[in-house]
Image 1 (spheres, rainbow, N blue to C red):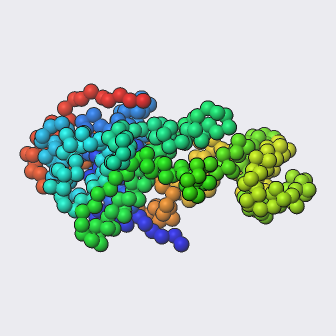
Image 2 (spheres, rainbow, N blue to C red; image 1 turned 60 degrees about the vertical axis):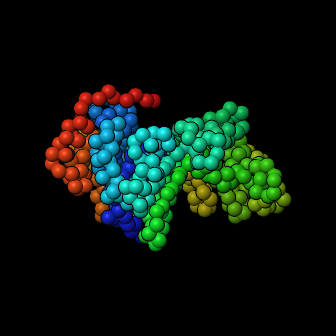
Image 3 (cartoon, rainbow, N blue to C red; image 1 turned 90 degrees about the vertical axis):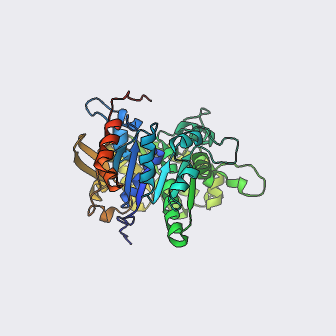
Length: 405
C-alpha cells in the first residue's frame, strides 16, 4: 500500500544547530515529512558549503545534498546577542538537534540544563560520537573513525587482510537516519505524555548494533565469540567477471540453486548433500561462490541477466554512478528532480526513496542560501525590526572561511 507520508510533520518546528552530515541528514528527513526546519549557521556557514567546485560560492554539492527543505538563519553564538536570539527561537520549537560536544554545547547555551529552562517540552536530540557512561564519552568522532572502531573496515578487508573503508559515509548516513527515527518517536511520546523528551544518538553504539545484526552470528549463544556471517564474509562473494563486464549473481534459496545448477550444466550437484539445504550451503559457501566465479565468463552480462531473470534468480549488472543516474526505473519513479536553484543554478536533487508515489505533489524548499531566512524567521519569533537589523548587521560581517577535507 502506498501511504502518503509527505506532510506528516506539518506544523512541527525544528531548530537544527548541527553541521556536516549526521545532523543535517536527520533534519532533512524531518523537512521531507513537512517539518519547518530552521538551520542555524555561524557567519561562515556550514563547512560543507565550502567543499565545492569553483563558480558556486557557498553552495557546495555536499551542502546541497543534505539541506533541502530548510531555512537558513545566521547567528554568531559566540556573541551574547546571538545566543539570546537563539534562545527565543528554541522557545518556539518542537525539536532541537545539535551535534556539539558537551563543553561546546555549554558555551553555546544549548546544553540540556539551559534548554530546559527555556522550554520544558522541546524534544532535545543530541547526536554524539559516543554515549554517556563509558570511557569514550565526550570524544569527537567522524565517519572513518567509527568505521574503524566498529569493525566495518576490518570486514571490508576480509580476504585481502588489509582493512578498507566502505566508500560511502555510511556511519554518518545511518546515524542520521536513526536520529530522524528517534525524533519521530520522541514527538509521539511527547504528544501522548506531554513530558520532556531527551534523545541521544551515539554513532559508535548505533553502528556497533548495525554491524552485529548479522555478524554476531555464533556469538548469539551464551559467551561464544562473534564469528561473522560466513556467506557475507566469503572471499568469493563478489561481483563476477562475465565475458564483457561484471555481474551480480545471487541465488538464495533451494529453487534458485537448483535452477542455477541446471543452467550451468551441473545437474550432478542437484543431489549433493553439501548444497541440499540452507544450512549446508552456508557451511560450504566458498565452494558454491567459487562455482559462480568459474562459470561467469561463459556469458555476457546481458546474457546472464536474460537467462537468470527468466529463471527467477536474482541478478543485476554492476553499474557505475553515471549508469545509476541513467537507470530507467529510478527515472520512471521520479527519484531524481531537476530544479533551477536561485543561487546555485540548475542542479539535480535526489529524493528519498520513501513516499515517492506522492512526493511530486509537495514541492520541497531548495537548499537555502547562507542566512537567506534570518530576517523572516526572527520576525516570526517576535523580534522588532530594530532588533533584527542589529542582529543581521552583526551576523553578516566579513568572516574567514573555514577549511576542511
